[in-house]
Image 1: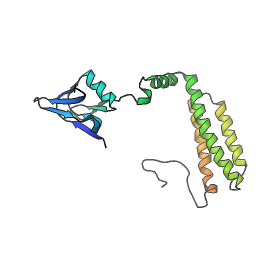
Image 2: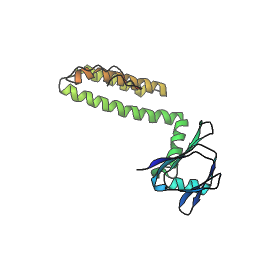
Image 3: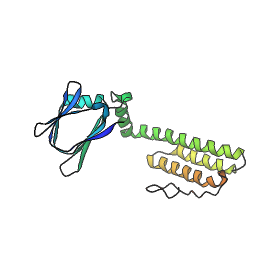
Image 4: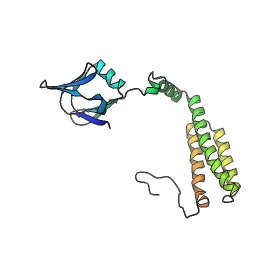
Amino acid sequence: MKDSFYILSKGELSKKDNSIEFVNKEGIKSSLPLYQINDIYLCANVILSASCLSLLAQNGISLHYFNNYEYYIGSFFPCAKSTSNGKTTINQVMAYYDKEKRVKLAKKIVFGAIKNIRRTAKYYIVRNRLNKDMLNMFQNIYANLDKSKTINEIMIAEANARKLYYSIWKYIFKFDVNFDKRTKNPPRDL
């Protein structure tokens, strides 16, 4: 199992052969076992070489920087194997800034979620636990989503669908369930 590795003193992190070596300010050298490291936390002023970063990226090791006062500065995350050329990240950012494309993608995602919710409702309508009017209510939400022009309108349609879905749980389950809304940190509905 891979662990986190903490560097608490000033020094230099560099590539040596096919591994990483840390040399502290006193000149003491330590070899880092790459196969055992998940991520490295740098809590002091540490100098890095580009070849060191490259080797860490090849081994899927993240770096997290903190200043001398333990404030978070930033992180280096290696590319995932499936998106090693970064095209997915670039396309995601481009889609985010293209309002029309963003709305279109958001609608597709929420349409899929509502479609699954409707499928669940249909299942219980056939088993006489739900009224067919519920399906019409989902259809109205679906129609409102189709008319949506902004991300806010899409989010409202999704919220309405989930609220309706949670309200039918008391008919679906054979035991008393009171689930009005989702909560977290901590969840109130365990």
